[in-house]
Image 1 (cartoon, one colour):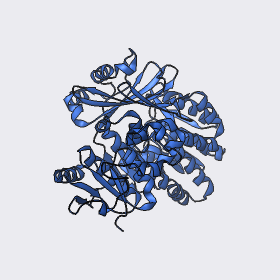
Image 2 (image 1 turned 60 degrees about the horizontal axis):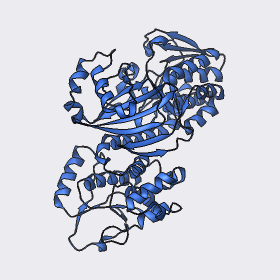
Image 3 (image 1 turned 180 degrees about the vertical axis):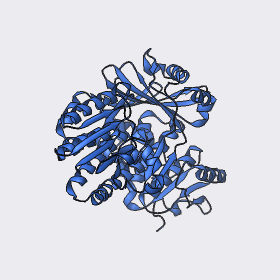
Image 4 (image 1 turned 60 degrees about the vertical axis):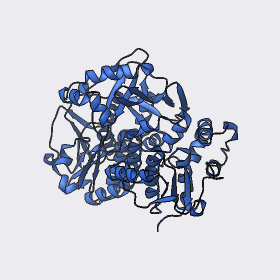
Length: 506
């Protein structure tokens, strides 16, 4: 590792360069970035508490400067005039330009050679190790797609990144209903006078609003000003008289990138070049910088480059795969968000926090007791003081439903012939196969009994299909193994299922 070349001067590339140089001060580390610092674009980047701990363990000096330039915030769900607020803990956001400036200073301080305005081919660089950190549009990954086992899954919905010229009081998740359909904002402050304002929408609404035409008419270096004006009006209640700001802002479809192999010869991929996870879990910069930590550790621990690359992938891929699984479920939830706006705002917030199986009902009750209390009260149609937050899972399961004394049932709870069996659920609960399943089962009219494999992923998918059936007015029982009772209870509280049963197919 005498000579290291890094392709891409984003957060992951700069952080990797600094860590590699600190690990071996005699190594020659060069970053090649095709853009110029003054042309950098973007809005805010969010960093959660766990990511901050990982960055502190790897390089306390750079984290200190990152946090000094960051903006802490709480979160809120807003539907109309109703608001549910959730403490942000140690959640912070920082301007992407400021994050790059901090990482640039620390890379230079470590002795990294930074070269801007250079478009290079990673395969041609004369280095012992070439770190490919050139983002989701990685030319290197595209060129080596067969060797790396690249797959790219394009999302169904559309989104655009915008900003505001003022700081919101807190992060805001909010729908805006328009004559063309519902748009949903994910917005958060990242500086005293700036906020990120991301908006997403389903394809049909996007087309009805005419954005298929404005997207085609917008040059890559420009912003879709017609969309920005439309959305400024749609979200006027959240913008306080300000307009949305564009920066190469256009409608996009999220691309989930996976690769079977993260290295090829001297080349090793990092961050979005190797994998992506949906923005709704705030993971792009986090994953790239944590990749950098793992890659540096592997190259330091192993004398052989190939063994180091294998170790890096073996240690990082499980965590990345798990994050991608969480992100995929989060993406499905947000793609279908308008269907849930009938829920009371606190119950909707419970549904949001538990949407991907990453936050349990017990954990959310511990961190946000008042929102959870109100959300569970709305689910059970009782007064908030009747909710037992000391035992939210058994309390949720014990609530009566129609003619039944509790939510936990078995087949003897129903008359003969009262159930329609659903035992083959598609892997994508919002895809075409699931569409057909939901249409077929909902026409039956009987209570749907949704069962399947006992693994957790299978149960979470069943709960998504159960929610789709329930949204069509059908009563639903979702079956799962006893050890996953907390997930079943979260499904009840979030309005994904009416009833639950313990069991499932082996």
